[in-house]
Image 1 (cartoon, helix red, strand yellow):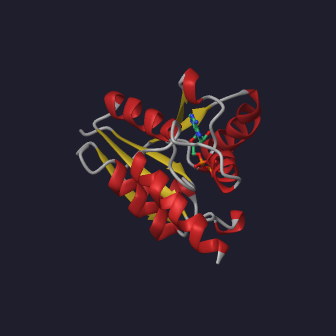
Image 2: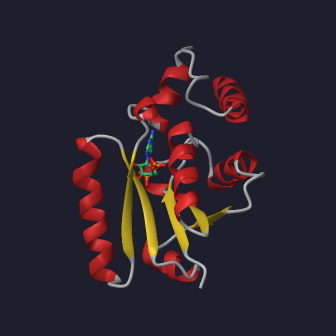
Length: 163
Ligand code: ADP
């Protein structure tokens, strides 16, 4: 049986930190489905279609990784993907509390689903989508943290949101 993992998040936008986690997960499992949460409560900068398209662009050459937008409960999305494994990335202690709470809640809702944590690559441990957006908005260089095509999308969107 194929072992499918899901990697859910907002990806607003996808950073090299996310890419690293996802590629490492793809080495551990037969297939990884990236779940792009609509996260409406977070009022994302990019809408869910834009975030999905950006991820499709980044992973176009990796047949082990596919992308699907979702809304609603994460455990329902996992079941829909026929997956019993949720991948999450851990950067710092600050992620830990929330992530452990989320994993515990998901386990109580769906006992068969396991959360697997991968620690961030040292180089990307301080990278978050929100920080990257903010630095870029203020004119800082974030090219080290974004895939070139994502950097272009972010630059374009920041430019058009100014007008
Ligand atoms: P969410 O809204 O679910 O927190 P994010 O897109 O911010 O979505 O993050 C998705 C997952 O990726 C989370 O588990 C988060 O901790 C992890 N993550 C985010 N940035 C990094 C990074 N730089 N390195 C490793 N993991 C990361």
